[in-house]
Image (cartoon, rainbow, N blue to C red; front, top):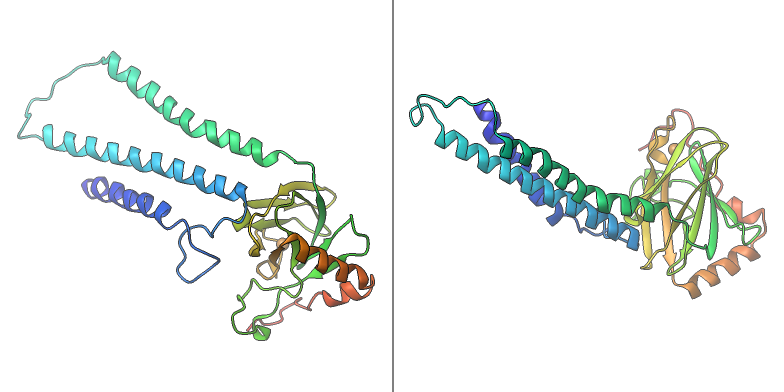
Length: 281
Ligand SMILES: [Cu+2]
């Protein structure tokens, strides 16, 4: 018990203090412990809330640890051999009821505000329909008929130097920066989940339902994610790569994509055969 009393809080403190310090790493890298650099305002809010909660947690752990140290030192047997007996401590009881409520309120208020912010749909400037399949994604731009393609993982054996293993895809979802994009997510078979951590996006892809989430990417770049709902054998092999381009670049890409016929675009993104027990090297 003594060992637990001393080691548990120390471990928690180290974890709690290290977590926010490690929170800002760039895209996935070796030994990354914290979040990827945020690509949207929403993700920045999520990281801020995380730091807020972890700071409160760390403070509580410190307070409890200090109390424990004080009590162990002050009330040890040879210092106070005959303990006092009492049944009521109204002030103390009031404090240990009200203080936790206050702490919870300080955590709950920004949490609820963030949840409300996340579920708010802003008038979209661009709509993208995302259909999950076992085991690839299909992206369509309903505003631009015909622009529709599949996005499948590049098998590790076919990766080029510098590409991320299990994250790189043949056709990235291209989106413009500084634009309110509405993602309409559904599934064609089982439940999947569209999860892009650096943008703070996570939404279930449910067959027969259309789930909607808004995003607004601030910085051009490539943002990686993965399906994070266990959806079958190749669940780990249906990554998401979002390429955020400047508006001019996006328009140029769109013009090319529109020019390509309905047949050509999907062919570019035809799903690689990753079914069955095909070994992944
Ligand atoms: Cu999936």
